[in-house]
Amino acid sequence: MQHNVLILDFGSQYTQLIARRVRELNIFCEIFPYNHFPSDLSSYKAVILGGSPFSVRGEDAPHPDLSQIRGKLPMLAVCYGAQYLSHFSGGEVAASNTREYGRANLSFIKENEIFFEGVSENSQVWMSHSDSIKGLPTNGVKLASTHDVEFAAYRIEGETTYAIQYHPEVFHSTDGSKMLENFLVKIAEVPQNFTPNAFVEEMVAELKEKLQDDKVVLGLSGGVDSTVAAVLLHQAIGKNLYCIFVNNGLLRKNEFQNVLDQYKGMGLNVKGVDSGDRFLSQLAGVSDPETKRKIIGRVFIEVFDDESHLIEDVKWLAQGTIYPDVIESVSVKGPSATIKSHHNVGGLPDYMKLKIVEPLRMLFKDEVRRVGASLGIDPELLGRHPFPGPGLSIRILGDITPEKVQILQDVDKVFIDGLKSWGLYDKVWQAGAILLPVNSVGVMGDERTYEKVIALRAVESTDGMTADWVHLPYDFLMKVSNDIINKVKGVNRVVYDISSKPPATIEWE
Image (cartoon, rainbow, N blue to C red):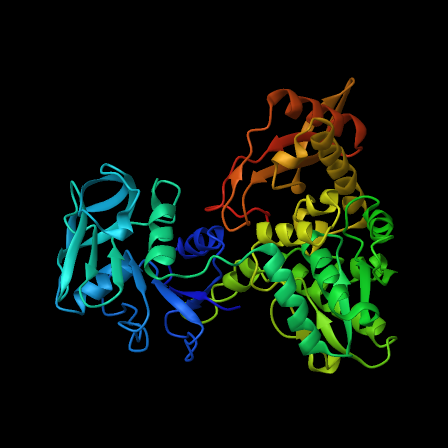
C-alpha cells in the first residue's frame, strides 16, 4: 500500500481507535510498536505518535528513535507523544495536581491555524493523563488551551510537527476526526485513496505476482473473513485455489451442510470434511479454555494436513487473518500477555511445509465486509455474525461432551432464529449462547428440576476491539427465554450478559 500513515504504539488502549479514524478518512495506516518499526520509511507520508500508560518522567518511559521521522515527515504527537516531545526537547512536563481525565472544552484556539479549521472554540475533547505540559519545547507555538490545560495543543516552528494532549480518536472528542483530517489531508497532503475497489484491484495484482501458478489451500469456515479471502484468491488464481471446510463438531446446528450449500454457485472449489468425532474425542475431559483452543488448533492442522496431502504440489496455506488478530497478538514490549490464543495468527508446524498468504491481514472487520460487497458477495453472507474459530467449545464452560454440544446447538438456534424473526439480527454485531458449568433448581409442571443454566450474549461493535452489550427488548428476551426452556431439554434457567468489552471480553473463554 502506498501513501501510508505510520502509527507508533506506546501501549495505549486507544491506539487501535486512531487507526480506525484514519481508515475512515480512506487513508491507509499501519500500527507498529514504537521500538520496532520499519527502517525504510520512504512509502510513509505522515507519522502519528500514540498515547501511553507510562509517564515521560519515569525510568521505564518508552523512548522512540525519531531521528528518521522528526523534521523529515509530518508528525502528529498525541497525549504521551506530545509530552515526550516537550520533555526531551527543551520543554517541561510535570505531574498534574489532579488527574486530567474525561471531557474538557477548548477555551482558546489560535487563529488561522490549518489544524483547527472548522473547529469552534468550546469544542469538546477527551483528556486522559496524569502529567501535564508546563513548558513548550524549543520553537513550540501554543495552538489551543482548555480551562485547566494551558498547552492543550502546539506545533513546532520550522517543522511539520503538531502535538495535542487530548485524544482526537475517541467519540467524546467531538471534532477529533476533523482535526485528524486537517492534519493528514490538508497539512500532510496524504491522498484519500484507500477504498474497497482500490484494495481489491491492488490485492488481486499482488496475489497474482506472489502466487504465480502455485496451488493454494484455504480453510473455509463459512464466516465473512475466510469467504472474502477465498473470493479474492479465486479472482487471482482461479482453479489453483482449493478450499476445505472442516466440521469440527462444534459448529452451529446444521451449519456444516448449510455452509456447503451456501458456497454452491460461487464458483469456488470447496470440499467438506466431517471430522466432528475426531475433535470431540480429543477434547474429552478437558476443561481449561486455553488447552481446548490448542487441542482444536492442533487437530485442525492434522485434519488439514491430511487433506492438503491429497492435493498434489500445494505450496501455500491461505488464512483469513484480519488486522485486530495481528494487533492483539503483538505488544510494544514483545508478546502480549495471553488473553486468548488466536487460532489464525502465528506459525505452522514444520512438517506442513506450506508458506502462508493472508490477503486480509491489514483490514478491520467492517473493511472486510465492504471489500466483500465490492466483490459482489451475497449480503446475507457478509452480514453473518463473527463466530469463534474454536466454535462452541469456548461457549461450553468446563469439559465438552456430545450431549452438551447438542444442548448448546439447540439453544443457539432458538436464540439466533429469534433475533432474525424479530428483525434484531442485523442490529447486533455478534450474538451467542453460553452453557454454564452449573445446575440450578427449577420447577417444571409439578416436578423439581436440577438442570443447566444458559447465558445469552449480544454485543454491538465495529471491529471487536471494543464492544457494548445490546439493550435487547424485554419482550424478546422473555419470549426467547421461554422458548429455550420449553424446547431444549436439560435447561431450566436463562440469564442475559450485560458486560461490555473492556473489561469483559466478548466470549466467556
